[in-house]
Length: 111
Image (cartoon, rainbow, N blue to C red; front, side, top):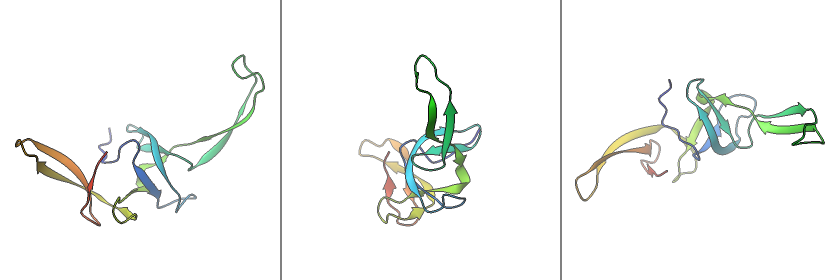
């Protein structure tokens, strides 16, 4: 099982592979396979036969998973890819929370 600091709906940039440079939002994370589906990245074509739900059939396009090591989180402050760190932050009532932050700018990542 993979422990990752990335979450669904995070904005990420592809840093390696055929789709290097593309940006998108994480749609799904497969922790056991160490892969993620990023919106608009690694589009594949699937040939589907006619069914009752889809009587037309034809060729559909969808995103395929890419390896988690090929993406980086986009820092919300600098809008550039950044590594992620964890900070323990105490709020007003004294409760402690672990929060993610971008190592490039030091900005807390909410989400």
